[in-house]
Length: 219
Image (cartoon, rainbow, N blue to C red; front, side):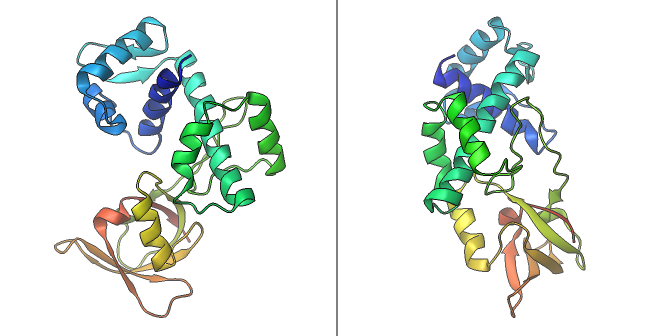
C-alpha cells in the first residue's frame, strides 16, 4: 500500500476516534489539506480495493481490512512519537511531523522493538491510546474540557496534537497529561473557562476554543 493510501486510512480512523461525527469527503479534504476532487478520487480507489465503504455523497467508513491497516499505521505513529519524547528528548509539540515521515519507513520488527524498549506503553505523549499489535485499542473514556461545568475537579487525559501552538500554550499554563484542574467558572458569553491548575497559585483563564483540544476524566 502506498504511503498516501496509508495516510488516508489513518486520518479516517483518527477523525472518528474522539467524536461520533460522520466522516465525509469534505471533512477528509479539510483534514488532509487536499481538494475535494482529489480526495474523492482517492476514496473511490480505496473503496474499489475493499478498504472503505462509501455511498455516493454519503459518509466514509472503514471496512474490516481498512480498519486493520489504519490501526497498524496509528500504532506506528504513536509508538514513534513516544520513543522520540522518551528516548530522544523531543518535546510533545515537535514529534507529530517527525512521526508522519518515519511511520512509512520503519518495519514492523522495528516498531515492535521500540514498543518493547518503551515497556509497551498504552498511550502516546498526547494521551492518545496506542493500539496493540493485534489491533486492540485500549479504552480511554474521557470528555471534552470545554463542556465541563463549574465546580468540577478533573484530570487531563488527552491533549490533541493537531496544532503545536496549542500544545505550547498548555505548556505555558502548566497543563500536561494527568494534571489536575478545578473548573472555577464558565463564561460562555465570553468563551472562557477559569481553572485552577495543580501546582499553580493563580487561576488561569482558558479559551473555550483551546479547551476543545483537552479531554479529561473526573479526578
